Amino acid sequence: MDAEWLNEPPQWREEQSVLHVTTGEKTDFWRETHYGFVRDNGHFRFVRASADFTAHIVFAGEYRELYDQAGLMLRLDERHWIKAGVEFVDRRRVLSCVVTREFSDWSTVPLFEAPNPARLRLTRRGAAVRIDWAPAAVRPDDPAGFHMLRLAFLPAQGLALVGPMCCSPKRAGFQARFQVFQIDHPIPWELHA
Image (tube, rainbow, N blue to C red):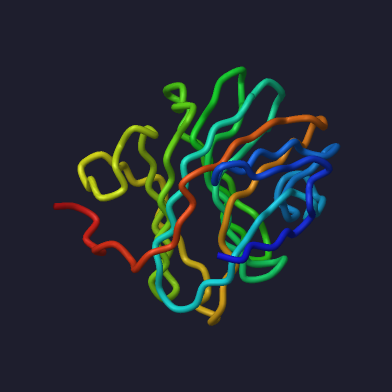
């Protein structure tokens, strides 16, 4: 897959199919809600995907400062996107998802420490996007190993950009590592067996 950068980080390298990223100063993706500002300077390495698909990624980070984050992003444009993954909040790693349709909303799963590394799976079918997570050791084809994080609406506008994302809104120098990024046909759509 030929990948491109939106906001190329100051330091990155790819070795043996593992992408290593060091974030720039005060990077983020956010629109308006609560804070009143727009940030669109986070690091996002994307490929173009059309129609319906499932994207998988395994990722880890050296989470230390508030809002350090890494995961997957699905982006239509600067006003319509989803980022999901792990974020450092209240001195722990939490599962996190932001859905932006003109304005950003944010949800977290704060009751336990999120795995590091973690596996994320994002499935787009039309205007519906399903995001599932699992510990990194779970195989991508093991339906029992994944847990739904979010089911969200995002307009079905043809081509989408999808790939690894990382940000550090409070600092520079957050280090993230991404591997096993792939795009496949969409998984079966049933929410519950």
